[in-house]
Amino acid sequence: MEKTNKCPNYESCYMPKVVNHTTAPIHVFKNVAPKLVPFTKFTCIYFVAWTPYENPNLYAALIKCLPILALFAFVWLQHATNYEESKYRYCILLGLFLSCVGDFLLIWNELFGYGVWFFGCAHIAYICAFGWYKPLNLRLGFVIYAFGISAYLLVLPGLPKLLAIVNGMYCIIISTAAWRAIARVEFTWEVWKWTKLFAAIGTVLFCISDTMIVFSMYRGWSLPGNFQRGVVMSTYYTAQLGIALSAVNHQKLLMESVALQKPNTD
Image (cartoon, rainbow, N blue to C red; front, side):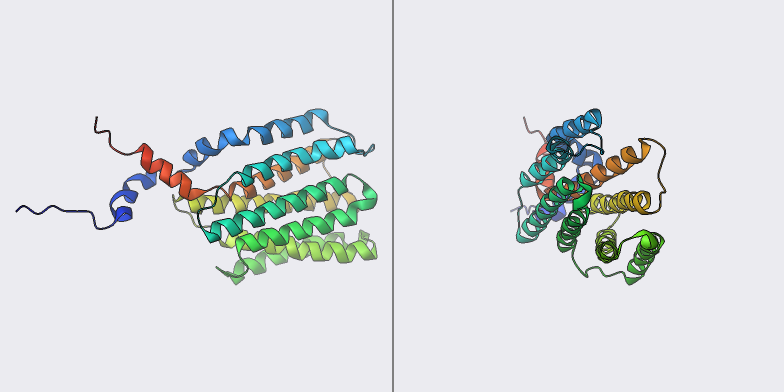
């Protein structure tokens, strides 16, 4: 009787054949782009409406929050396949919700401190998703904290005492979020690795956006005209988009990829 060479393991036999094609970023984009149409539309509405900061109202708050609510719905529709994915997804959802509350409060200058507090809590939720210590990468953490503390010391002279404490705590929290997100990055063609890169890019853009805000408010360093607000909000929305994309169900993408590459026996 002739022996047949059976595949001892599904992953070892099939997965290597599809990794390079199916786990590239373009596949992630093709899968998730249609689901991001509401976010794109609401972001365009915000920039078209361009509600003036001098006239804070509920309409302006709603327009500002709509893109984040769209990202919340996007992440909510991602189905987790195991406990780790489920935990990650819920932490990102919590972070987006708290960010939305923070966005709402920041419309009014007198609520600025409360808005910063909610954003700080949002970043703690993101840190819980990224992981607190694995992989650790202390050298990276030292560099990021050095940048964060340096930026904080530049604006410290212009901060009232209470806001100095609040912003100091926020600086440490957002620096930690950036550290934990960047520490996870691995440059391979696996979907899970690319979603980690999205999170890292998102947190870096978050830091840039927030740094521009505090420099403008307390040091008077800002871009001319409406360029300041345009850059701040575009980097902010892109930051939240990157973090939301990190919650994409990579296992589902891989299963769809394998199904697409099954040989046609007809």
